[in-house]
Length: 244
Image 1 (cartoon, helix red, strand yellow):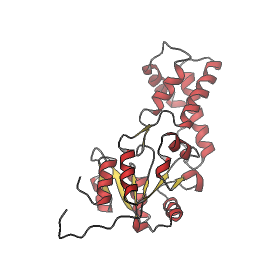
Image 2 (spheres, rainbow, N blue to C red):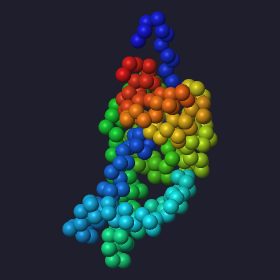
Image 3 (cartoon, helix red, strand yellow):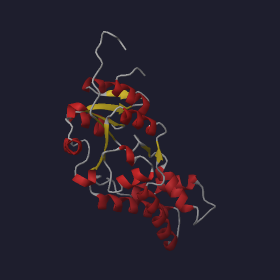
Image 4 (tube, one colour):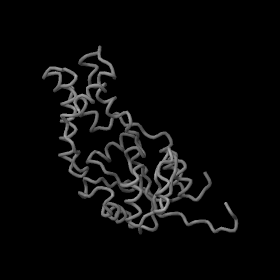
């Protein structure tokens, strides 16, 4: 750090997105579907699952309902799993078992994986006395899933879009979360992976924003005041004003 430059004050609060920020969702659909299929037909492969997902695509709803409409969102996923089971050629009884199994795993968050550097990154911030929160486009399973994954203990407050019927990038979800912690937007950061919902949404709500951009795809967002980082570890470095 340049000794002539004064240290940047630490933020009062840092908020995090969940999907593909704290929890990796990349294998969620394939693994959940395959896990549900194996007890019904152990001869099938993950390639069969992926083929059924693709083949059933034309019959699926063309637009996913808003995240804050939790009941409609759940119905959308259940319908999706129903169509995949049919595309796999399962009979009616097997389709019912398939949908029940995969839905239970989906809504409990079983296939989700904690991002490897998430616990250490959260711990670094908490040890500096920074209050942590979650702002996520998620349904009413959010806190239970964070608890199951061992991350809930880090957060003073968790805001799911279902709770207030507002989804990112709507500034009202950010404002609601800030109010829960009694923190001004200028004294808070938001870390997420989505350039529009997370980065621009937070900036337009007056917050500082870190975009997780591991492949360097969004340099143009720096003009909007968005800080980019390749990982959660680097995001914390940037928030704390430390060299990466």
